[in-house]
Image (spheres, rainbow, N blue to C red):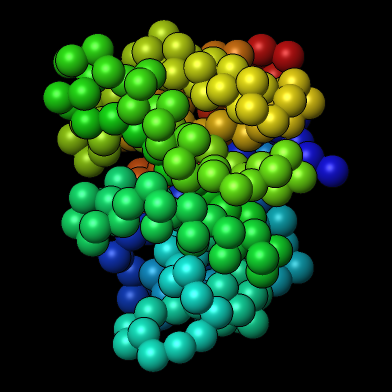
Length: 262
C-alpha cells in the first residue's frame, strides 16, 4: 500500500550536532510537550552516535527515528560507513538519501543516490529522497529541468510498488542554512511539478498518495503558510529542529495548516 499524506510529516535533521546527553535532552523536550502526535508523523534524524539512545527514548511513543545517510552496500571494507542492515538492527525506520550537503560536500551523484535509495528500500527503511536546485539554476530558470533530471535518475529502475514507499523532499539549495525560504507559491509550483512527474511515470494513485516535504530554512513563523499549500505534505527541518520549542511549534503549525486546507 502507498504511504498516506493525510497527515503532515515533520522530520528534524540534526546534521552534525548533538552529543548523546544533548540528544536525550532534546528528545525529552519534544516528548514533554504532550503533543497530540496523532495529528502528524514526527521523525527525528540524529547523528549516528546518538541513534541507539534516541531510539530507546522514542520506544512506545509516536516519535519515529531515522538516520541521515547510509552506504549502498550491506557490508564490506568501507571504513567509516554505516549500512542499511546496521540501521535496521538498531531500530531505525527512516533514512535520508541525497541531502544537498551530501551532494555538494561529499560528491553524492544522482546515480549514487539511486543506489542508496535501493539499499534503503531493500531493508524496509523509508527513504527521504532530497532534490533541489542551486541559486544559479533558479536564476537561470532551470529549476524544473533540474528537478526532473534528479527525479528520473534517482528513481531509475524502481517500479511504482517501490516508489510508493519513497518520501520526497524538495530542498532548494539556495534556501538551506541561509535564512532564505522559497515563497509558498514557489514551493507549491515545484511540489506540484514533482507530483506531476510521479503521475506520468508511476501512475495517478502513486502521485496522489506521495508525501512531498519542503526543506529550506523552515521556521515556526513560515511553516503554516508553506503547509497550507495543496501539494506540500510536511517539512524537513534543519536548524529549528535543534530546539524543542521551535520544533514543537512547527509541528503544531503543520497540524493547524493541514486542518485548514482539508
